[in-house]
Length: 283
Image (cartoon, rainbow, N blue to C red; front, side, top):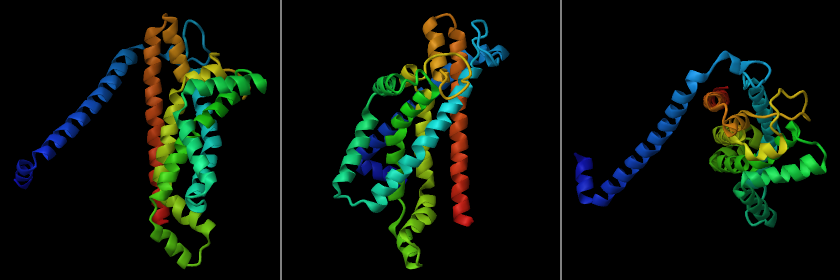
C-alpha cells in the first residue's frame, strides 16, 4: 500500500520502474531465445563422430578445436593476467593520480580496449607471423589475444582494488605490516571477486574470437604438435563449417559445444573465486 501511494504521488517513478522491468524482460527474452534456438538446432546433430580424435571431411571433428581452444585460453591468461594485475596495483596503490605516466597508461588501456579485433589480427600477422617469422602458430595467436585482453583485466582489477575499503589498509599499517605485505595479504584477497569477473570476461572474449586468430593462428583442423603449429579454435571451426555451406548442422552442434564450454569455464571461475574468498575470510 505504501508503494502504491508513493507511485501515485510520483508517477514518473512508476514510469521509470515500468521501463526498467520491460528492459529486463526484453534482455532476458533475447538471451533465452538465442540459447534456446542454438540448443534446438544443434543438439540433434551432436554425434560421437564429432569428437573423433582426428578431423576428416566426413566427421568434421571438433575435438582438435576443443584442445586448441583450451591451450590458447590458458596460455593467454597465464601471460596477460600477471601483467594486468601488477599494472593495476601500480596504478591504484603506488602511482599518484596527477602522475603523467599514469595518465598515459590509462589513455593507452582505454585506446586498446576500443580497437577492433581485426586490427589486432593484422598487427599479429605483420609482427608475429611475418616479421618474427613464426608463421601461423599457436604462439602468435596467444600473444595477440594476450594484448587484446590486457585492458579488460587491468580495468576490472583497478576497479576491484579501488572498492577495497581504505580502513583495511590503515588497519594493516597500524599492525606494523608494510605496504607490499598489505597489498598481497589484505587488498588482493579482498579484490579477488572483481579480478575474477574481469578474467571471466577475458575468457569469453578469447573463446569467441575469430578475426584475430584467423590472421595469426590459421585454420588448420588438427591438434597442435607444439606452440609453432597452426590450428583452429571452436569459434573458427564453427565459422569455417558455416562459411563452406556444407556442414551447417555440424556448425550448430559446434555452437552448442562452444556455449557449454563457456558456461563451464564461467562456472568453474566463479566457484574458484568464491572458494578463495572464503579461505581468506575464515582461513
